[in-house]
Image 1: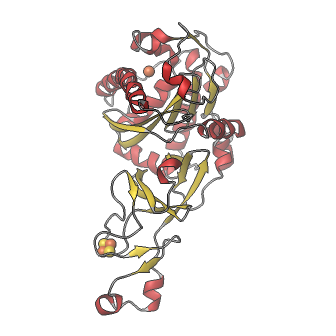
Image 2: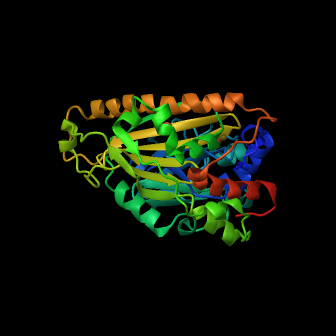
Image 3: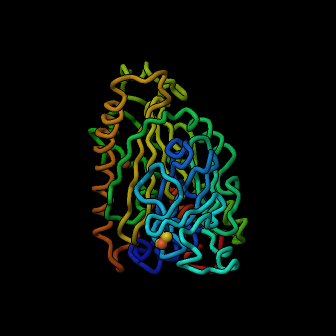
Length: 382
Ligand code: FES
Ligand SMILES: [Fe+2]
């Protein structure tokens, strides 16, 4: 079967801009961990769909604003996260929890704003929603309900598991040279594990080889309901949660596992694939987790941001940071193997490259591609 993914979808700046407008500025996107903004005045900053965003804690209330001062456009907060009131570092304008300018030093002497001018100064606010320990943001002025984007089962599993996250987190970013879609396609293709990770993930876990028969015919035909509601319902199918059909080569138990309260505590590879750019995994049956966020930077560049943490500690222990470091080292190998092949794929692409072929086991990707190309090639909106 031929794929619908013409090479232009991975190469064109014009398509990239269309994706940002039609997908990334419309859907709920992972924005960070609530544990990083749990105290008054704590904040975190992100660039979401090209927009700088600050999430700020105002006496326990979390708000998301565009991180651009209304005076001379300085970022209000800087760095990945920290603790500081929402005050611009450039000329010290400060903002309140509604995004309004709270104070302008020497306003009358220097600026002479009238009341109307002053009242119109309000930061752009974005919808923010907390699911367990995870924060999601939506840049749309009319955001769809989170429950439209993700199924009830997905939200429930996410909420339930993330409440068990520990608050000690290790974070790293890979600046990778490939299009963001190559990652989601790779994550929905477990057949690569044997070949790309033979000495790492493929050693520990054996994923079952089979192709599901459901949806094969459906994925070959066109989408029928192109209304916003129909396209949103279709998108909900792309986010899945649960245990993969996989077997562990050997039972594993490490000393640190006795120090935490696992989410499930049984062997299993748990996976949360949230369209378009979030992947949470627990290869330890809920004893530890990683969050991967694939942030599109340009057609050929993606930042892969990864958080590592264990399940909640029973009590602090001296080597917990080493446990996280060893998770990071292991993941560096596995993620590095994925990044190497995906960068090679990207580097071979050119506008006349052959269209990819797909088999029955790639039906999930075919469904995503059908929806994606419909959105890109028509005026329909979600
Ligand atoms: S740029 Fe923010 S106060 Fe001047
Ligand atoms: Fe992989």
